[in-house]
View 1 (cartoon, one colour):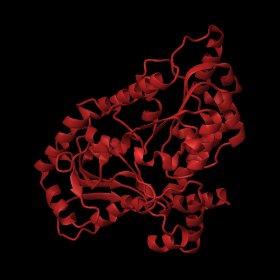
View 2: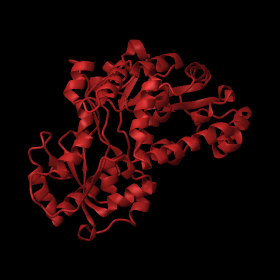
View 3: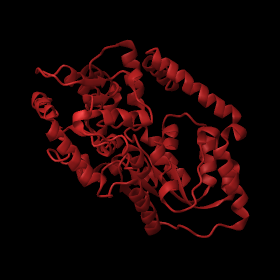
View 4: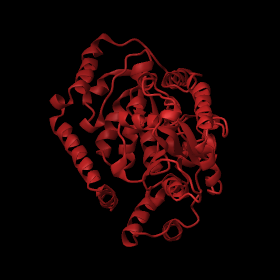
Length: 412
């Protein structure tokens, strides 16, 4: 997330200012004539799930001047709120993970006011991270884990596609064949790796499992999510088919949002071979060249295991991906930022000179982000306490129950 968020600061070559809305948006932002205003997915997620003061946020975002664009993610859910936000704040351009065929399903022009749509990935290759990872890379024969993977059981309101992530763990732990491969696979939230520990884990694995991220169910107003949460609370252990019939009959596969995940690029960076469920992968990753393909009906798991046992073959696959995807330089955050700025230059106004009277406000923004404890002590301390509580709940294996309870309460 941080790599995506700060890519504009690192690679645009322009003066970038950040506002963490968890600490509020200062009113003086409306006094600054920004050239470009980017509403990042970290903010848009707060809007979708109602965890900000909607009308006060909307008012200040309306008052901020500059050409406005949005970069949302997880667009399968509560898109009506985003459409209203886009329309009322004057956002005209969206950089979306949706393919062109789905643009008008999720963000119809008459609801969103959008004029320009561009499809992007959920994440890219970070050159700063590349420098760190070069020290971790090692030959496959010396890696202690043959197959690694981390996931969690997604809620059924993501649709059938959302099940693939956690099914991968179960299918490979219960593979219908004998083997001597060393597996480190888990759907347990307590086993999640954060930050550099994730990269360290990847570098220990010869092969990592994966699939396209996204969802196959569009829930524009959040009613499906509310219905599923309530039903599962009353019927724990219900199957997908049961929940589908009770909560969203006939709506499964009403959306095709299947995306490359940052995990795919991260595996490439650590020269880890990938075994991926068949998909499009942005037209970048090719089966048999850049990854070992797992059939989406799970029919070839035994054959995949045999391929994974061949250490030299897996290393060649990983080297192909590194050469064609990493070394090409086509899929970096630098290129992503360049593309965003170029598209804005084509359709909007961008980069006039900064008014000298605004410099003190801009300096205030910088200081506010550098020292949040000074400027927003209550919000800062509350956020840190919430994170500590989260870590404790995860360690006690209670976080999933806590998340479901909070989700239901928020949607009453």
